[in-house]
Image (cartoon, rainbow, N blue to C red; front, side):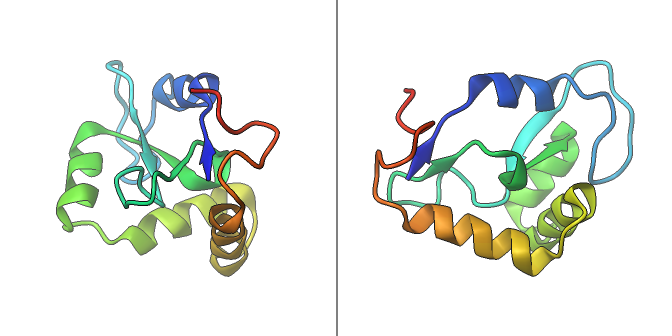
Length: 108
């Protein structure tokens, strides 16, 4: 499943505070995916419940394994006022949809 939303990614880039460490930055933030784009199967989910606004340091730590992926899920769940389990279940349901099956998919 691919859901590509450049406007949403830009919204996360424009935030001023890292959702992982709380550090302020004027340089913009990276949209960090819980289910990462590079995890195979042509997956890309640019949806709010799969994204965290991360400073470059936190984003690099997450990709190098120094920051557990679970931390991203916890931040998303707190921000969305839902449980981590509910967020994760919804994300895996999206992944299970056929490629090109969603109304906002395939915008690439």
